[in-house]
Image (tube, rainbow, N blue to C red; front, side, top):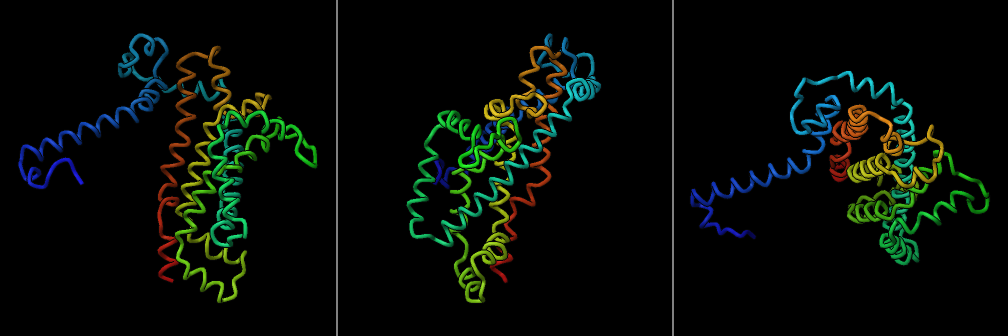
Length: 289
């Protein structure tokens, strides 16, 4: 359905007008979405005085690439980036394990009270995360049964990420769409629940695993509140927590360079692995086989 009829589209003026509107909307989206990133990239190699005097100008006195190395060495970004990678990797692993196993159980194994459990999982999506900070912190402060404290540890920063109802819903919906003929054939061949999950379901789930992985890594990379609460030691804090803390005592150009480095890594991560994550060859190959 379109606001312009097929008869009107045949007119040259209408056709060129639509193309002009589409081009204008595309350019507006590019400016809104990429504008802040491009300005950050430009300001990362611009001296502070030039940024303050002419924030929109493109290097009035030329770019200064030494600001990037200055930010890397003076602020000790390598240690904060290592902390961020550890937390992001742990968060990714926990979320993938919980989401795949829970989605598999609810969609393929279908326990007796599966609908009730699935409804409870959906209900947690309507609870604001801010309301969960206090009970979550008390839980991490003293784990049930064992009474271990995870405050001040990397595990305390990434283990709660496993309780993501959104990822469970995504995985279950994808597992619901898998061809049941393949699953039934695997059962007839003698595959148990574990073999079915590991050898049949997971190979067909590479596209959705990529989506969950991208969401998990990006969410952990930019998370601020929870790492700030559970990691009071600055030496263990990720870069998203440390940069705001050192901003008042850091030169503007150095701070912007550090922010650009922090933003560039997840962008590169997505660009490098998007084809591996988002392609659907796994499902096509399983159906052909």
